[in-house]
Length: 249
Image (cartoon, rainbow, N blue to C red; front, side, top):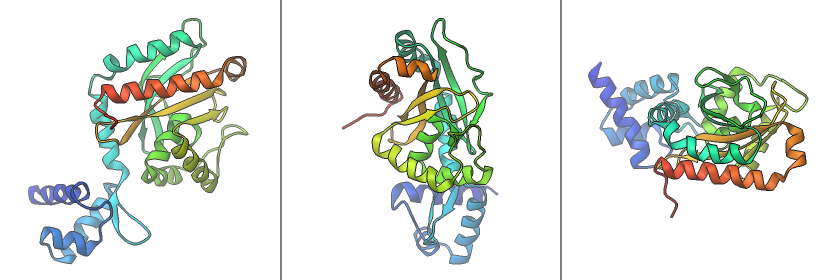
């Protein structure tokens, strides 16, 4: 058992030390294993979503690795780092701020802050989950972590409103645009019927491991300067990224 765990850890390390996609043969040669033995480990790791196999039958890191990374981030005293940044946002605009992470096809919130006199959304830290395809945070996480899309497909894309994206092809088109522009918008796409703007939070390595959003009544956005709110959301997410170690060069 210990030897197997050690070997799987070595396989994971290969993806950080060499190429992002490796074949069964390449992995076997790098670790000095018979091809059949390497295949046994790879098959097990794919089953657990630690790795995934692409259309060229090469292996890549799977969504479980990033999910583990999310757990580590959660333990880094997020409230202390996020609270003052979120406070600036909710004090300037009327709405709610969340920080969310990907959890097997859904978004789990790990932080929430609400503006004074704002309507309170039924979202609870560590408990509430929303389908990733129907939230601004979820779409950011999917755009920057393509391997997550598989979990969304597995769970199905439920329709909550007329604006909910329910076709995987349509979702992938929007995800490409989100990746290009650096933020996501949700316009009444889930059961809360709200407007959300989200931007990515990056770890020290540059991985997008969470996202921050600002959620408010749709009419509020129409009555205020959308671009100013968008800029503030992006700035806030970038500030949190710096707080947890991400450095831009």
